[in-house]
Image 1 (cartoon, one colour):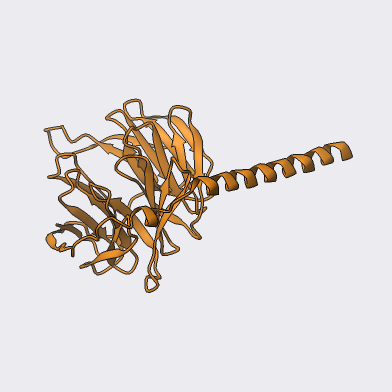
Image 2 (spheres, helix red, strand yellow):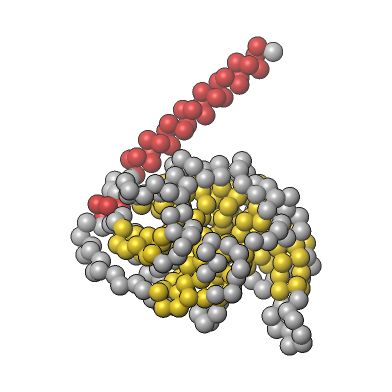
Length: 303
């Protein structure tokens, strides 16, 4: 019995030693910071972003929105249940009906993203993410590694990997082909409510209840930048990058949307128009418009 205990202790020592070696190697490779690299990049000019339209129709808190690929339509969602409901919008007869209900999660549904017309990813308060076959209405794969509610997910441009953010304060990168977590990013001090891939897929942004947004790089396997300000004390609900990746839009509990210069780390604009928490936001695929949704039941289009 003592021999087994000695071997366990020796294995733990080896693991700790390897962790320290990895840390040292990372520090040696991190020869420059994002701030140093961006020193010679010109400052952004003053931004003039205004509300162009206000969309009404919801009677309760708006929790999610998504632009259509044609940039002329968007979909929004208000309070619901544990189901992921798929609607067929091509029907020409009568009211639009639910085409498929995907039921397997044991907690609330927090986020869903289409991979294709036939597959969708979902995340849930049951600490899991799931991949679904929409036509068959069945779960294909389950992704388990988080130890807290999974609040958000974002699909990489190559659609082979996705990132998830959770209440365990970690962001995890998953390979859909293997079903495994391939990277785990730490640093946040509270729940991660939002994750979003950078346009080129090599990095992702996060928003947390610790009042910070952060940029993580997959290739360097580390945090590149924090987006914080001393007078911002509330949590972030949602994040999105501009088409170029130079701007990071973030929705906050204090009813505002702050705009950050990704390279410089400075706040370059504050968008104030909502009367309650900004719960979701998104940039149109052509990069010409930003939509924000709020608990005030309104959607606003900015440009």
